[in-house]
Image (cartoon, rainbow, N blue to C red; front, top):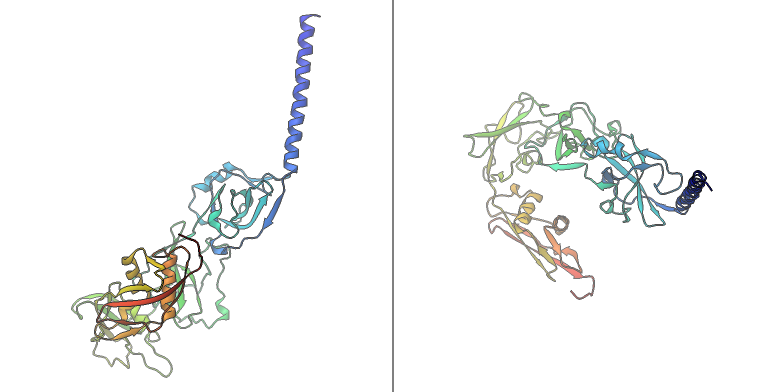
Length: 413
C-alpha cells in the first residue's frame, strides 16, 4: 500500500472517530440538561428588602440556566457595567426562587427600571425566607442608608402635594400616595421623622402630616418648603442657651402647630411636640423658666415672638436587672444614649419631678436594643417582659428596670 493511501485512510478514520466522539459528547450534554429539573418557590421576605446587586459572575437567562431551553437574557459582559453603577435603577428585585435537583438555587430578578428580567444563579442556600442567604451571581443590598435628621423637623409644606410610599427605585412597589382620598389640605404642615440617602446619594425625608398623622410618605428633600409660615402670619420662637442674650436659631411656627383650633387660641406649651422636636441634642427646655415673652402665653397673637430657654441635659443612667441574668448589656454607653433619645427625656424637668414610663414602652425599647446587639440574650433565653411600676427620678439621675426572662431550652452550655 502506498504511503499516500495509508495517510488518506488514517486521516479519514481520525475524522470519523472525532465525529463519533463529538456526537457522543453532545448527546451526553443534551442528556445532562434533559435530566435537570427545578422546583419553584415564592419569596417570604419583606418585599421592600428583597433587593440585590449583580456581580457579573453569572448571566441572566429566561429560566434557570442549566435547564433545557434556557435562553440568554443578559450576558456577563452586559451586566459588568451594572456592577460599578450606583444608580438605583440598576438595583434588582428578587421575587421568586428555584432549586434544581442538583442542589443549585436560582433567583428570578428584575431591575427597578424593568430593563432586565430573568433567572440568575444564586448559590447553594435557600434564600426564600432570608435574602442575606443569597449568593452566586448576586448579593443582598440596602437601597436606603439612614442619616441624621435636620435640626428643624417641623413646619414643612409639600411643594407639589406628592408623597411616595418609598423613594423612587428603592422599592419595587413604590407608588404615589393618593391624597385625594384623605383629609389633606394644602395648608397642612409636615414633620420629618426619618432621613435617608439612596444608592445615588440623593437625600429623602419620611414625613407625616401634623394635622392627620396617618397621612405619611417619602419626599425628595427639595420637595419640602421650609418657609411656609412667615413671621407676620405665624409666631417666632427664638431658641437660646443663655436666656435670650444669644439666639442660637429661630423657627416660625403656624398657629395650628401651637395648638390653635376653632375654639382654642394658640399657646406656649413646653410639652408641645412641634416645639420639643426642635430642641437640639444635649438640651431640654428649662421647666422653671421655659419661655421669655411679653405676650400672653395662653393667647398668642400673629407676628409675636418668644424666647425658648434651653439648658443642658442631665443624662439619666439606665440599669437593667433580670430575674435570670439572661440579658447582657454589650455597650452601656450606647444603651444610655439610646434610652435618653428614645424617650425624649430632654422634656423632663430639671428639678425633683418624675416621669412615668410604661412597662410596654420599656419592653419595646429593650427589644429594639436587642435587635441592634446593644443588648444580647444568653443562649437559650427568651425575653418576656418588663415589670410594672417603673418611674424616672430626675434628682437621682438613675432608673432601675427589672425584667423577666426564661430559659427556653435545656441544652448544657
